[in-house]
Structure formats: structure tokens, C-alpha cells
Image 1 (spheres, rainbow, N blue to C red):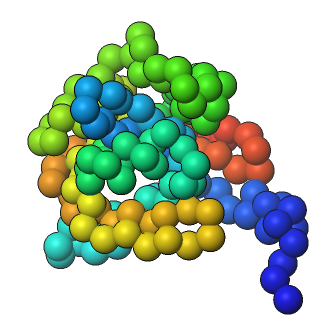
Image 2: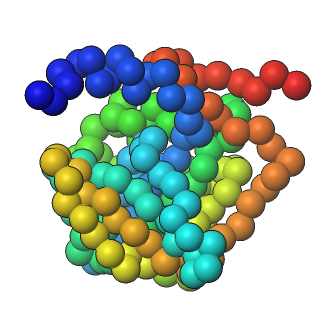
Length: 161
């Protein structure tokens, strides 16, 4: 018998993660959302995986365009994380007023992040309420001198130095 969804939520809160923003653009519309499901799949060829809820605007844009960007947030970017996690509703422009740039595909990436990935979708898998998108990494860059924004048990955390 499957685990109760609330029990799973409580258990998953014990997994410390970095904070990633997934962005997409299609036919002049750009949008993004905060995700915790982001991981490297392969170094050769370079591939990453994201998981997006199927009922989101970002999911629709990634599905339509077949491209997505990922910005890993740095310490001090909690406000951006909250904005893309839903404090700015899904039907509003979450990118408004933020400084963005592009690499290869034209997908907006957020300035000030620790790392940026520009990806083309090469495979999708539907699982429950989500779609797993595997992306070929077309371009990547990093700013290793900054510290990551961490998330654990519904709170932002810092690395102890």
C-alpha cells in the first residue's frame, strides 16, 4: 500500500537541497518556477533532469518550446526563490524587474545565480502529477566564489564555514 502523501512530504523535508529556478520561453512568453527536483544525469553527454508539475505554466512552456533554463540560486536570493515558488501567482510575470540574460537558446536566466544551464529537451517521462524532462546541456556557466542558497525542512539555510 502506498505511503500517505502527507507522510511523504514530512519525510522529504529532511532532504537538504539547493534552490533552482527553471525558466522557459515560447512565442514571446517567458515564465519560471522554483524547483527542488533538479539533478545531473550524465556528464558525457552532458544532461540534466528537472521535474515539473503538469498543471503549471512553466510546464506548458517547456513542453511547447522543448527548451528550458536552470539558475541555481546563491545566498541572499531568498526573495527570488519565494517569488518563483508562488508568492507571485502563476498567471503573473515573475521575471518582471529582474535582471536576466541568455546563453544559447534565448531562455532567460537570472543574474546573480551560482550556476546557469541552457538545455534542449531530449526525453520526457510522465509520472503521477509530474513530467520528468531530461535536457541536453547546450551551455553552462558557474560563479563558484558565492555560497549556495540551501533549503531544508521548510527553511532557508547557510553553509557553516
